[in-house]
Image (cartoon, rainbow, N blue to C red):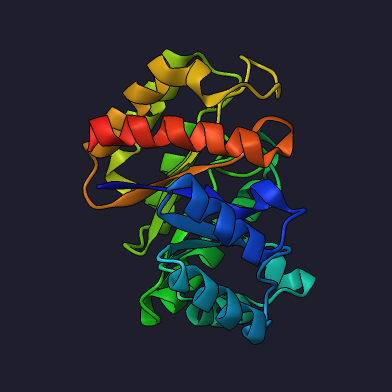
Length: 256
């Protein structure tokens, strides 16, 4: 099953209460809460409040977007233990983390080993709390390409580590689809947006109907459940989100 939802940092300008109300109005099912503003690391009171607001509205906590960088953050003062405690209080099923602080081509073998070791460590710690660790699929990290992501997952070799996916804007749709299909065995949530090819110009989600139906169909063949989480709507506007949410609901109704 692919559930619908929102990445909360799409609306950094809104409060958690406003985001909950907006997601409920949109008819979506879950929220990935960001650790940079809406549910700060170590703020148990906020995490508890946000969980209660989310569940009280009939929604689910889809994930905790921690912004923890494996191999980097611990030494920079962000202890993973604090992230994990916050995720437990929030009731998050998974914690999203970044695979280091540099792209695969700019990362030395020693740095890559440090990221790998830390991913394995935090995956083990989170497993004890029955929370998964999912990698952000993103440029500027070791998950900047499908090949590097697959390599990292092999090197870590921990069953509690999977990866999110979003379409790389510098690749053609057919290449994006092939990459998604190759990662299906360890696929977590999808981040859903539509940008103009090779740019960061945001478009209505409906402009990507043809490609996203293929992406969602491919994701549906992966084992287990996951979320398709909207982010990066036009002009960060709630009205654009509501419009895109209706499109996402229509797509999921067909693929599920």
